[in-house]
Length: 411
Image (cartoon, rainbow, N blue to C red; front, top):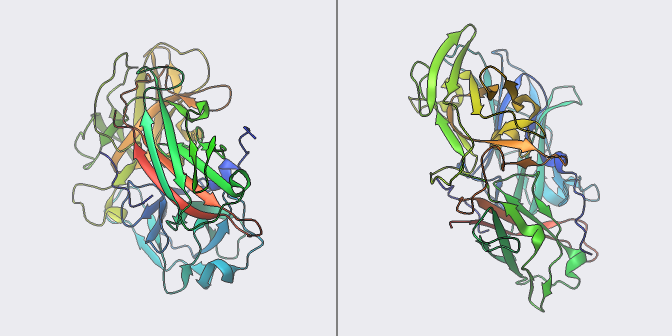
């Protein structure tokens, strides 16, 4: 399933502080931190300025906690834009309590679901760019979570394509991105200093290509073509499972069991592929829902999902199970252990009931998740590539997100 994206979308790469932008929980009792743009749960957290942004999360208790949310505007590298006043990028009041809280109903794991909608009567965001929302307990300076999203103004037009005819191989294991930018009404004097770009595959930050300078420049735009830095491992289609009823085996679920105090879902074992298999997926995304498909936020159950990768022990780094629930980086809680008796990697992850995509990746020496040994790399794989373009003219005080484009390989 392809996401219905609601977006119009020196040779040295700069070193962005990538972990600073990660949507993630920072407390053990906070789970399922989601950023949903324009009510589309499988779209990336990027949308046009003025769009509806929903941040939701669960605290694993029925006791109400008074939480305060604070928003900050960030540059392209996700560092706070400290040279701006709050009134430059927002209208209203920051640091407001979260009023929308509802306890779970008829679930074995008790939790309270909290929700923030932007814009709201207290706060409206004014500038195109990166935003980080943090949540604190009242009278605490330590955040329990952070949620990151970006709002763009479509001032520059981005054209992009993906090809399996790459500068390293043809119809084998890689895909290469080419993109071009039309400046539109924006005046760009020095593209290498004024422009910042990000290219992401399936919303992954560990393989993102950041601030690659264009190799073609014209009076009205720039191009990034035949750049080896824009060659990505093709990977394979994501695996998927769905659990709508904790008493029944859902899609790709081998068995459901109850071991107090949790339900446990064991998925069918997966083996590394040697040939490409076509399948529909959501490029790593997930949707929270249950069989009744009503009040999904508060009636969906928490359970342990057990993942199995059936393979001899692999040389090299650790193996992780990955999906967009990890915020774009391998999650330490999703590191797999090798069972010598079963000849398989296994991992149990506490997840909320619903539809999920996942993939097995092995970390290399640079901390990048690779699929060559765990999944295989196939040029036919349908991947989502997201391109973001920021512009800071000379003398400006912030990086404005002025172009966004999502393109699928569709080979």
